[in-house]
Amino acid sequence: MKRELPPTDGLPLRAADLFGRRADLGLTLSRQLNIPTPILTCSGTAALVVALRALRRRMPQRSRVIVAAWSCPLVPLAASACPGTEFVLCDLAPDSLDLDPDRLAALCEGPPPLAIIVTHLAGRISDTGPALAAARRCGAAVIEDAAQALGARVDGDSVGLRGDIGFFSLAFGKGLTSGEGGVLFSRDPILATELAQEARAALPFRPGIELRRCAELFGYAALYNPVGLRGVYGLPLRRALRKGDDAAAVGDDFTEHDIPLHALGRWRESVAARAAARLPAYWASGRERAARRIALLRALPGIRVFSDRPGEQGVWPFLLLRLPDRATRDAVMAELWTRGTGVTRLFVRALADYPAVAPWLGDNKALAQARRLADCTLTITNSPWLSDADFAAIVECLRRKLA
Image 1 (cartoon, one colour):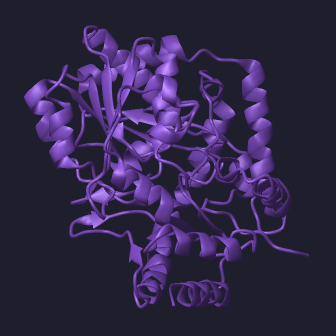
Image 2 (tube, rainbow, N blue to C red):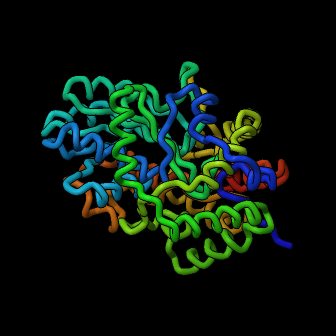
């Protein structure tokens, strides 16, 4: 039977995770990550919506939110649930996933922003320094979007603690999952209280949605394996590619209708809390596997593998590579994308180039670095199901295309 590897290294669920006593996910993550007891939401995007609404209550005269120009389309689409909010795109620094500090400073010289979002993409840790400095000058809040970085640390502390607000995602493929879910927290106890109040108002319990999410979580437990993924992931992927729809192939063809707001049910919370006991070993094995494979990739000419800097300890759901140009990247993808070995792309466009996102953006220019990342990057799963032989075949394909 043909196998299909996941594009990210998610934590598989066990039967014991599905059944057992009530478990407190917020308390579990607070202890594991040494963060304040978080607020649980139905998704990472819902966590961002709650954060933005709480900040708007604090600063109702402000509406601009600055975000990296290469990120998940759901981030600016959160404006659809925060009336009056406008997202402004900041390009990234050259050869980096960090915000361009000069561009960020220029954007803060206009009407003072409500918030600056620092995004920790692909399990890597972005530099919060420029955002914190800019926020101090203009009075904005700093939100750390760590949706793809649950478990990442900088100087020993969890990501999300340097800014005013941090959040993680518990969506499928983000490591730990509750069948969609989010984790929202603040080191400021007053702001944390305001976030909790906003979450209670914004996220009512919706039985119909919760029942569907429970079924999806059971499906994940049953089908998140190389055989089950052939049908639930591989077939839709190939169908989208036959239609030439790259955004659907990677799953970032979102609209504002993809942001339901509801409470996270107790059973799903308990499933994730029980599975979380395996997170430390899971993170350690991912780091070891990534280190071995990055060493092989770095022997290839012209490839940039995004990795940790001194003081950083990221997580590794996948490896993010930048190739020399779009033609080379496309040649590699043409050979590997449908092979079932977990090679895909992260975000297929800069945010300004998604038609569904455009209504929620301000005037955005000078996005050359974001567009280059969209054009020249690909990802390789860090799943343990990717064998050394399969990885060697990926490396050989890269070697041939680069030559």
